[in-house]
Structure formats: C-alpha cells, structure tokens
Image 1 (cartoon, rainbow, N blue to C red):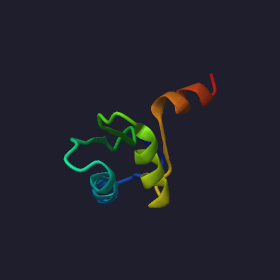
Image 2: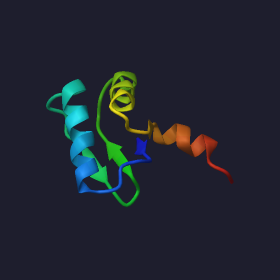
Image 3: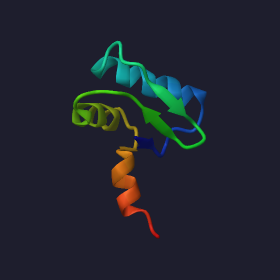
Image 4: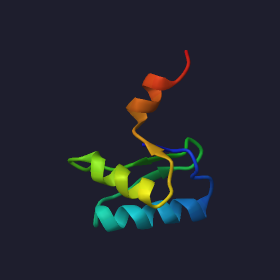
Length: 70
C-alpha cells in the first residue's frame, strides 16, 4: 500500500505501530523512497481502516495505479 504522508523513519515507526495493533506478528516491509508498506494479510480492509483512523493516508497500490494519470 502507498502511504502518502509517510516521509521519514519516525513515520515508518508510527506505521509499524499501527499495523502491529491490527496485524500482530506480521512482517512489514517499508520503502520510504516509494512511501510504501508491504505486508501479507488475508484481508487488507481492516489494515487500511486502522491506518486511516490513525491519520495515515493509505491506499492500496492497485487503487493508486488505477487512478494515476497516464
């Protein structure tokens, strides 16, 4: 997923904290340059909802790619 307002290591730590509450024990890969977080969960909806409740501007990568200008 892309998290538009994740800019630094502190942001990444906050994203990880949010994710650990909704998906404990899941490995999260963060790419700050691309502002992306990757994790393997059976249902992304609760993960996205938690991130958004915590103030993160998270969208699934597929949704972003569909809405990106060509």
